[in-house]
Amino acid sequence: LLEARAADFFACENTLYFGSGYLANLALFSTLCGRHDAVVFDERIHASMKEGIRAAPAARYRTRHNDVASFEKNLKKARDADCQSVWIAVESLYSMDGDFAPLNELAKLARTYDAALIIDEAHATGIFGKTGRGRTEDLRPEFDDVNIIVVHTCGKALGVAGALVCGSAPIIDYLINKARPFIYSTAPPPLLAASLIRALQLIDEEPQRRETLFKRVGFAHKTLKETAGGTLRFSGSQIIPIILGEEEKTLAIAAHLQKAGFDVRAIRPPTVPQGTSRLRISINAMHSEEDIVQMSAALGKAMESYVL
Image (cartoon, rainbow, N blue to C red; front, side):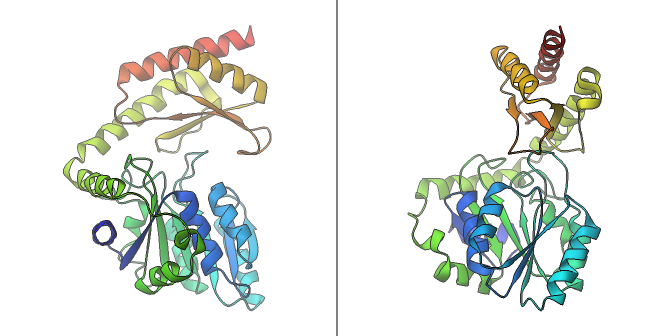
C-alpha cells in the first residue's frame, strides 16, 4: 500500500521501500551499474552513494562539485570509452554545504549523452518543489524522456525512517529481484509504512509548514550573517554551514553551543575537505525567531571566547 501511494504521490511508475537511505543507495549502484557501464558522480555526494559506487564494477568518473563543464567532460570520456550504460549521480541538495545541484543542466546532459540520472533528494523531499515533492518535481514534464531515478529519504522532513526509490516499473522490478541489500534485509515494520503514508498526506494538507520554514530560513540567514560574517555560506536552503577552517576551533565552538542548549554539530574531515571544518546549522519549521536569535547570540559569544 505504501509503495503504491508513494508512486502516485511522486508521480512515478513504481517505488521500492528500503529500511534506510544507505541501503537504498547501496542497492541502486551495486545492482544497476555493471562492469561495462560508467558512473559520473559529483565529488561531494553522500557517503552512502559513494559506498554503492565502490561496490559496483562500473568505471568511475569523479567531477568537480556542481561543475556542469566537468560533468560534460567526464560524460564524453565515458562515451568515448564505449561504456554501455552511463549513470549520473548527484544530490539535489547537498547535506554539508546546503547548496543545490544544477538539475536542469544535468538533465539536459543526461539527454544529450543518453545517460540515466540518479538523484538523492534526502534534504529536499517534503521541502522543495512546487508542492514539496522534492526538486525533481520541477523537472517535469520537460524531462519526462530522461531516465531519472530518485531516492526520497524518509528520515528528514518526513520524520519517519527508511527510503523510497522511485523509478520506472522495469527498474523497480529489477531491484526487487536482483538487489541483495533489499532481498537479504528484513522488511521495515508496517508501523513505519503507515506513518509514512500519513507523512505524505501532511505535505499536501499543511503547506504552511514549508512556508514557515522558508521564513525562518531567511530570518536565520539575516541574523547569523551579523554574527558569523564571511564564515557563513548560504544558498537558500535550511542547511546553513559556518566555515571555521580549523578543527580545534570548530569543536570548541560546537561544544560551547551544545552546553548552551543548541544542538549544533562540528563537521570535520574526512566528512568535509581539509581546511573546511564547519558548524552545520539546520533550521526547521518548529524553530521560533527567538530560538534563532538566542542561538546566534550564543554563537557570537562562543566565537569571541575562542579568540580571547
